Length: 260
Image: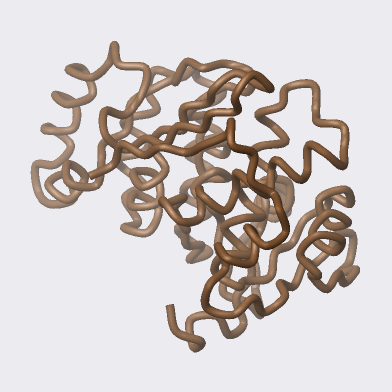
């Protein structure tokens, strides 16, 4: 991504995005707002916290492209019913392995949910979310309509950013006590890793995460209203070499991907 893509951009984490949504109306923003696919999955209740089971299926990008035109909703209902018993995406997956330290984690649907948000495919998400209860369906509908109206864009977790998240999480776990469900801490690091990988500032209310970014990544921290703005240090072109030079790699930990 070129430098022009980074000018006046801001990544919001899950708490900041929810707070912005709760204010109501369409915000007049000075920045171009992004969320990560990790945040989008949480916003849409794709998977419950502390559970390995997915609440509903969403189409992979190659399927979604065929659903955006006329007649797409009819085809989507067929796909949704056909895939209803599947607990994860077939190919849009990334696996995190933590040796004997933590159970493995399978992250599914990152490219898929980012594609739907960026394609403004709110109808597809609403149809897919029908297996949720009435209240959560209402929340999903409100949130996706808000993202669309506010022109929020989504950055997917892909191979290189996932690879950077692993050593970051390793270092975070050495320095801080993880949340009761360690996957919640992993999600925080996934959002940070994506913003750092793309050299984009991030807004959060998580002081521990901001302290970590400052201590380990040399990020600049600025108090912005009730939140903290994490501005990344310029790591140059080879970010992976930077992380490896810090000695974060645990040989028992690895990432594998199954997207094609």
